Length: 111
Image 1 (cartoon, one colour):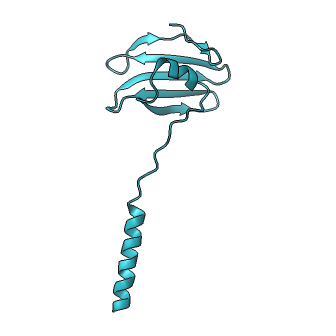
Image 2 (spheres, one colour; image 1 turned 30 degrees about the horizontal axis):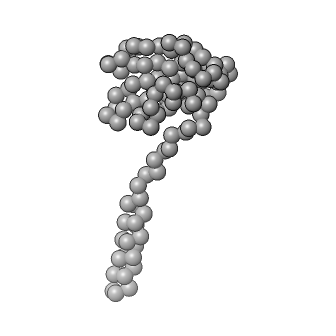
Image 3 (tube, one colour; image 1 turned 60 degrees about the vertical axis):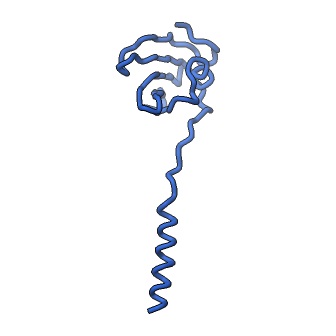
């Protein structure tokens, strides 16, 4: 009976320890080719980056506040190395400012 109690206690401790681990938070990827340009226009440290689409042709990212308000959208065309940054309006869908497509190798987007 004592052995059963000890085994049950040990298993409970082990399972509790395994279950209390925090999920690993995905770190933002600052190695993306468009990040050096995006960082010139938006504060990437205060916004959460959400990848909407990332395939062989393009990458679409949404940047939102901690409250969940969508603030910016970026579209990067991989084959042509073109980036478009869109500032979303108050409702999270109206375009207030739309930057022209620019080569990612360039250092500035033109409004």
